[in-house]
Image (cartoon, rainbow, N blue to C red; front, side, top):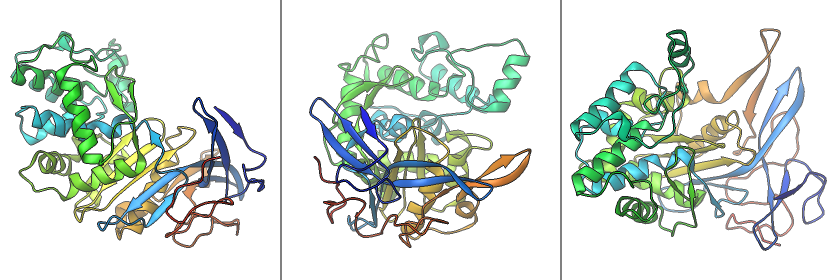
Length: 377
């Protein structure tokens, strides 16, 4: 991948209208990506994050289309709710609390570990059946407690252990082999891929290997947003509706103490949301609308403020969004700046006066199209 920071492919200088040009793939294709968020310190814009984002109202139009939302990305753990639906379709039979941990990137808290153990035991399985890699908890306090007690990385504490336990339990329920459950050609993984394609309304563009070792299905942000909208609006007794209900009912299981995904699920009525590594976030609302973001450099700090803008564009409001709209930047222990999204609704970036994102069309570089897809060069 080659990036140019001096000018866009159309010859425009770098600014908020076109932040970065990427050339990807075996055939050179250039995408002008806009700045989605910026980091301020003592009145200076210290850093900028480019990426792509999309917000789809229930009628399927685009309230926001920034960057290249139709280009395939790796959703990482944002795929977990879709995979959980596939497991239910394949025969997984668990209560809502266990289903929430299947869809989780848990923090490694005691409750999370107990749920994973219960899920395994219910299927007649053990921790040594898990094939995810050993790791420390991603939650700071659980990680410190484990290390202070003399413990170390293991498969149970790794944040994807709930998903892996669910995959194993599904194999037991369906009569499929468990030892090879991570093979992309395993009947479980074929079923999960089919489910992801049906929910996203598009074929999986590629299959990679996720950090936890499971097959990872590449989708566009548009497809991911569509899938989350379908989850959030589904009939409660359907597999989609059951996953949505479990995540809403147990937000502290989906993430953990102090996690933004838990705050969003608990604070926004009707929301289904999931964070993913490398700057990915996706959400759906009970009316069938959905949104998704990918920060191109993979940083996590920019994705939440951008997600707040996307949710507000779909009509959400409230204290939870206000609390997450920006993140403090510290200097000497004091707040001296913030991480904040550009203002999608006004088309201006805070403090710059330069062009940004618009609600109905994409005009970040010469040749951009009204349907929100940047022209390929």
